[in-house]
Length: 123
Image (cartoon, rainbow, N blue to C red; front, top):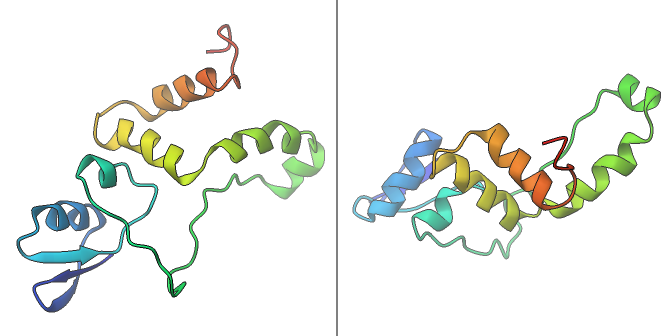
């Protein structure tokens, strides 16, 4: 992670970028992941990358080729889930884990159920 503190660029741990930028005393801005839940929780603003300097970060499902070949129907099962996981949704889900301290499996289970991807008996 890159963070500008005063006028001297520094490399800092990912978590420090958010807290130091939030303090606004020694750091002016930092490079963050747009899906990080701490952005909204800390009232930070993500600037538009109008020069397309940074690569687009998209969450992606990864499946072994042999598994996909053996079970091609996975695409029909996974695609609707993937389509729902935009940056705003990911940021909100990540905030439940990173800010509120909820367990990731519980957050994902609740979201999958709410969106109709899991039946109540499966949850």
